[in-house]
Image 1 (cartoon, helix red, strand yellow):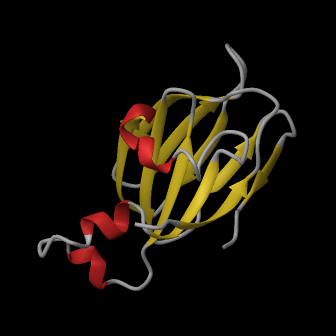
Image 2: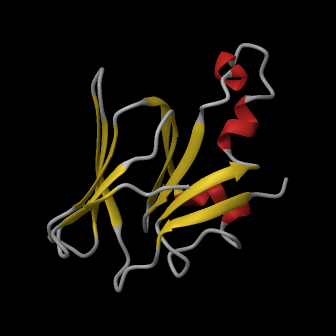
Length: 134
């Protein structure tokens, strides 16, 4: 299956590590350390529908397209986790047109997110907040 995507956050100077994933009823918050023991980049989804965390070794078929030299935050248009889940009759979110898919990659873990809106990204080194737009 071909994957169509857009890079939302380009490559960093170092190899980021996903160090924490927090979920409560309202927010999904993902912490990414751009280097060991650095202040994290914080990615927040306030309308997540679902997420999964996988070791990068479980996504080997995608690494020719997704790798840290291209970026670390991607929006998936087709051919990703949403399409895989949509093969199941019980996956009711496939019938909602506002579901968007995102992929955050790190050195060891990757987080796939299905959400109704783009995330908010806080880049501590630049001390700014951005809302990636598709």
